Length: 287
Image (cartoon, rainbow, N blue to C red):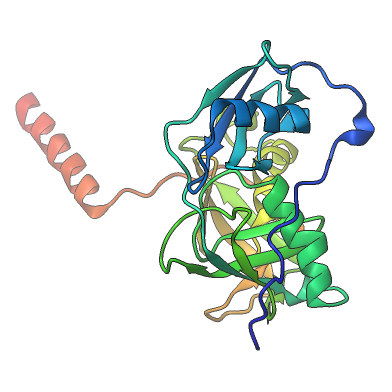
């Protein structure tokens, strides 16, 4: 379809936490400067003070200042000048000049402008946590999107106040009714394995699987392996099974399950060969 650009820069971030009242003071907050702004200390402090309540992912800007809030301690709190320690990250984040975002059709509502103003812009103003590239999936308030183009081409970066957002067109996918996956033993904390032959399914779904698939929407195929927070998971079954190159995607009503036992990593032929050689050597020494 025809690419339509936003006729205005991203709107200033709107408060997500105003209804929570006065927050506890922040002890410290990491911030990541964006390219293209001077980010003088006084201007940064003013932007932080005007915002007040901070949490990771917020994009703040003003005259000659623009940055994204990183890790906060506590996770949500009130910036207090002179009390909150502000740590500036070493790396300056690159800003896309243009970006093309498509909505997954099964979560599309109303019209493209509504998707931009109510979902895409709020996400980029409140939830950017790292640089990304083409293929990046994200969601906001249940609506799902994918980045299909960036400028400069093949670059990584973030969306800033002057980034032009193209937002028309959509992506069709097969929505899964159910998805069954199992973790590998390697990297999985013992607390998620009550016994050697069982898993704490609810704990794994809560801490690994559900948060991951809240943001990932692209297609999966049976036997695919996905890595979540350093733990590898293998797709064991899905319904329906598209059986094609596109695969099936998770939606809010997809039933996720992790029943079974943790998988063992298979050894490569070279590793098995070395193991046999060591065994033979041990036999030879014992004879």
